[in-house]
Length: 184
Length: 159
Length: 120
Image 1 (cartoon, each protein chain N blue to C red):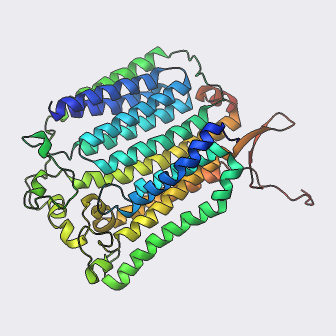
Image 2 (cartoon, rainbow over the protein chains, first blue to last red):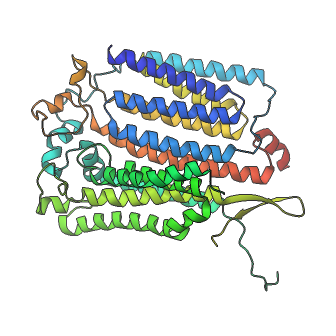
Image 3 (cartoon, one colour):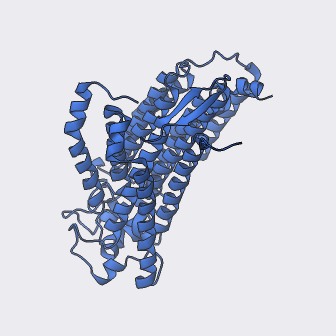
């Protein structure tokens, strides 16, 4: 089978999982459906010849599932039965269908399988592929891109991760305790 | 948070060495085969989450106390910055691969590629401690009911 | 057909953020949008060959033929960008879940209309 058929089957599977995750009323089942979506994305990365990304995606998705289950367990597991606001729901559905129609028209210029940089010998991609092993000495071109040619982006990513973790720590800290002998 | 049943504890005791070895292997051979610092760091974070869930919070804090986790987080980021500044000193530009230009190793061997393995190890330490820290923060926060009916947070301190 | 399907996944996440009332569902919609954008970026870098088994990952082994490696290998640049994007997505979602836990502590519910009613 061609690669397109495999990817379409995987994408339909992912779409079904995501629609179930959005619409189902039990919170724990919605969180497990997100696990299915992440797993499908990891398989799609494997078929697209990106093994680094598949490893990172599956491990990150496991940690995300654990954090989401920690947030939802034991705290009113069912969602509320909201009264549906029909006019705004209708408007949102029209907007979403408009977006998908726009995508079908606008993406006809982008052909899957023939990236714009394939024929251009001066694009950075071809430079990294040709000279990556000789200049950096690393056989994994993706690692040489993120840690030698574009290491500044990795520094930015480390900063963002650090800040997000400090933010989570600051939000969930308990009240500072006073010592027993202090007066107000 | 209590531990789980003896079956889970036995399997966790057997498997923890192999998971740690796999995480270290992914980090060290990041420049030769798929993997790298991010994959190794997340796998080692998953290992500590497994130990916390299987044995309970108090036993897991013996392996990796909370102050050590936040300290290692900062150490990883500082090593990464130190290698970048050394690149500025020796190579002329920020983040220059100064080890590769002066002492090139053989291709496809473990000690090739200059500062790339050092950066991989720093990223692995940073990502592993960050993710373990965020899990411990969320697992240790408990909602307690005060006497006047409002709720408050309490972080379990280590004892 | 593949690229519009990926955009449809993004639109499903957007619909969830816009219409749902439970704050955990909003976080789930945000996660779906992030996954779809990462998949879209990697889809843009794929190079099709005549025989499917000739496409290579951008990793050089001892047996690779270096002359036509750069014709057959897929693009390494989108993969490098998506690698950092996946880990950043995890950090941002962890922060959002911390906010959700704090909101539950303050208002006792996960429903945003109840929170709006209780705030006054």
